[in-house]
Image 1 (tube, rainbow, N blue to C red):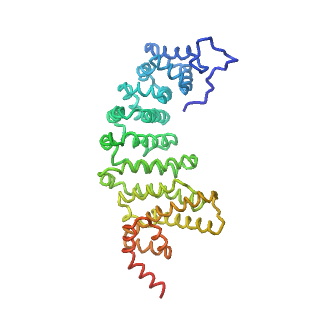
Image 2 (tube, rainbow, N blue to C red):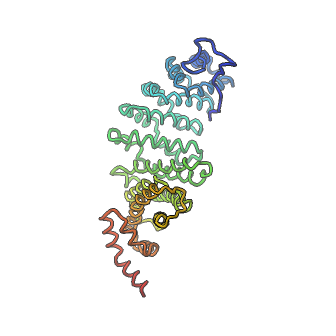
Image 3 (tube, rainbow, N blue to C red):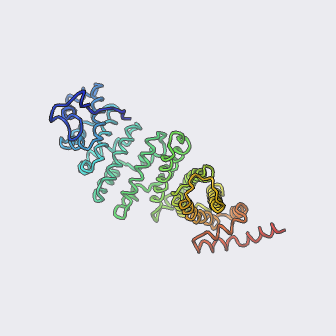
Length: 427
């Protein structure tokens, strides 16, 4: 990991010669040029890389490349080509991490991305490092790829897709998601997969995306990553980091399940997807029901979960504990909010009436859809359990449904069971 360095030259302590500063920074042109000369001289570089001072200078340069003016100065002096030839000589994970980190920082500038996309050989050399086992190097490489995806023109995406295919990138990325326990690497890998989905799964490029990234292990790997984040690494994450990861996992899942062949490809991933959906619902149930916090994104989250469940036909293989119970408890909590508001009191943190009412009015229908989809297609045994759990809340749930066809299906399927339950209660 890059250390925190105060690498800027203090004007009062060490004033630079006039003309030696890079742009509007306080960095020295001479310092950067000395490093580039060392990288250019391959005959002496093998000895330079053994010196601790060389690593320190490279690390200083890495820190400096956060400045746009420094990056443009490096571009002016053909630094990408120099790094291209020097990188294979780096014989330690730390030096490789720093070099890739420098290129990654440079790729935060669109001009650099445009240049590097014309260097197919260099791109392939960089992406070959995705197969290394050094987590810190992988973090920097994935950051670099994310920047390239974000700043590339749509017409340049085929270049990246070709390189991805050449180095076998998709199985490597899924391996990282499935096996890593490194916090920063997992988060960056999720962001990387999300960036690939957003940039490459478009109308123009979807056929190549399908061929490369619709692999049978994709959803299993995604589920493993979310399990690691929400269980084993939970204490090391901030709340916003966990929630970002959960939302990204849903976005990626929807991309992977958006093809005609998706249900067949992921037929054997159903159990892993159920685990992932349950973990997401566990988190938001606790936030709403226990912590009593309103989450505006929950509306889209529930709708996304419903879509995923329907595409994979998960209702008929799940018991109530997988997600029906979660949705019912959240529905009950929403009803409690509405009742508390009518009574003029609420224990929830967000007491703004407009926001509160807007949330409750919008979340009920998606929750009811999730529950009713389950009741429409689950086993007869589980349907009876559902009706037993919700009891007299059935009518309120079914009337809150905004889908007429589903409303009729559930009413028709449950009619004889509800009649029997009512007779048992009356007797």
